[in-house]
Length: 368
Image: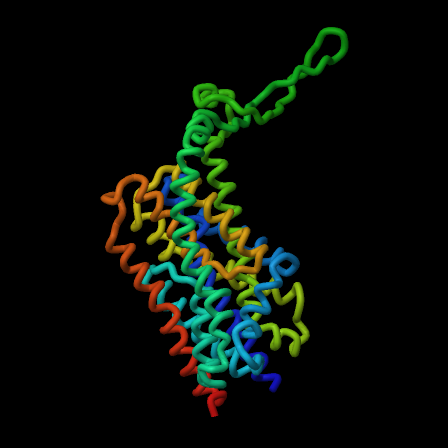
């Protein structure tokens, strides 16, 4: 039995890694697409903030743990290692495939589908609470992309004027000299530095040692908040699958959340470039102002959903926000081939993960 729990813990770590490889793009793609920074810096930034969001989830988003352990979906909860391992296998297999092909997909969808597939094999279709299934999973997942696009349309005109002003200023690190009296006549010059907000022309002065455009700074901040919200929302969903194993192995509570968050961050750092490339370059061109707006919408929706224990997909929210930016620019600026591939991947996530989860449960002996 200890081996079964250990295997389950490993599979949960694999799922967390797979999640990081696909979902890190959701908070950083606009940084790259808007020309604010390079892929490598963006991925490192997203991984750090995802980790911090995952750590906070141990205290602020525990409602999602109950939902994704199966208790909210099944008439009789199935907490055996075989069942939970099958769910992890079904979700991770699909996410790994999507990440290799550069397609952004939903971990929430994948876990939900795998859970349903394994449960149907174990207890039959009648065991699923279809009303809860639709209300807690399908409805938020269906509404969130539309809401994301609508919010981009509503907020961008309001943000554009203020962001245009911010783009004209920068944070400057100035070299300064401080004169310190020495005796009655002599003066000593000491180097010093100061941070000021100034116009772009002033920031071009030779006295400026470093500068950061205010709009770019806001964009970095929005990216951090989006990645943080993603970690806050996704970590408890993955933790739910390994809660039984972590308790049996004596690594429950905050340490287990930390392990899952670290695996998510590692997946993003090592394998997060392909999906980031898709969202940054293959959906629509974007300016920094547009990228910031898309990130802001994603942060608000995903953060609110995490606190309300609603399992929305960061993938659907962030990708739809980027699509909304393209639609505001004009439908011709959207790369519809890429969008169609993304939508197809979203549609097949539930059934494919369900099939793999069901097959894994049968092979592991749970279906007998």
